[in-house]
Image (cartoon, rainbow, N blue to C red; front, side, top):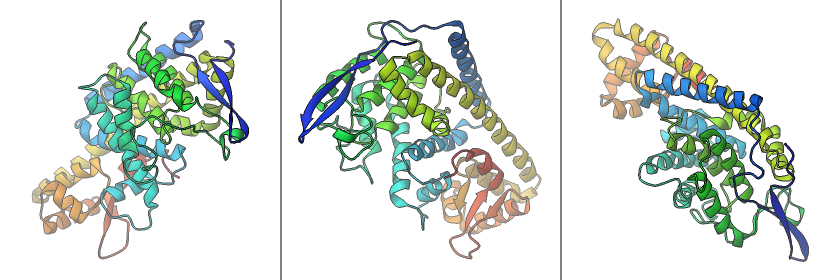
Length: 385
């Protein structure tokens, strides 16, 4: 549906040149959304798949094992959209503090995302989804490494831009800094159904675009904008845990994603964005459910192998559980996590290798690393750089 601009352009002089910044109108869209039968079917299908994903998660033998890795997968994917080269393996190595040759700035950025998402979801138990919480999440996201000098946790106090070398030749210029507090206040009201309640999926879709248009921080806007999606879905009870990694969909269809953000601003076709967004929710929910099922089947199959080992089975099963949380491990890390001696871990690893469950990937005698191959193949799908 064509509405025309969903905001207004403000032109000002800066550094001897004209800067044309975009100021989005408050949500919800006017005129109201045209939810025709095709879009209604897409919304319903997406909600059904989200429900199935939530149901699959409820049936997993130990949700925490899957959640640990799923959150990391979303962190890797979201950071890759911003240009990082880190993979899921890089992040797991970094968390083991065994990361020779890994681009440190990139992997710190991904690790920050894990912390920010985990923190944000935990804080939702005590705080509404508010600008205070968004700023706290941003502060954690930029606390260490690249971007740490870009006022973490503070709305920007200067003009930013996207593309180009300066605002005058940028691809997109967000609102001037003095308007950011009021624009974010309006977004906060929309997130909390003031004055009118919005269906959760529609709310998540529209809020993501609005946040990207405001671009309230000097750095980290894309990642925070993507973090908002699972926070909204979990806050409203659509998902109990953040098992939906929309960044995979946005990365796959990167050109269309950015084109639709621009089209929504310039033409007001929120319905086109909603069709794209709901298709992504449906697609990724279905993939995530299938992946969770495959991981559960792999875990159960390998557990049965290990239960037949007799007196070695107890230690081997403890290692196997740890590897379902982090499928790339070292002997010292497994010793700490499983509360087993290094010799006991070494013997259990031999059992896991003989059973064909893990393999050593360094070829060294010291600093060896062990990969739960089949598990990592499923978990890491789509994160390869």
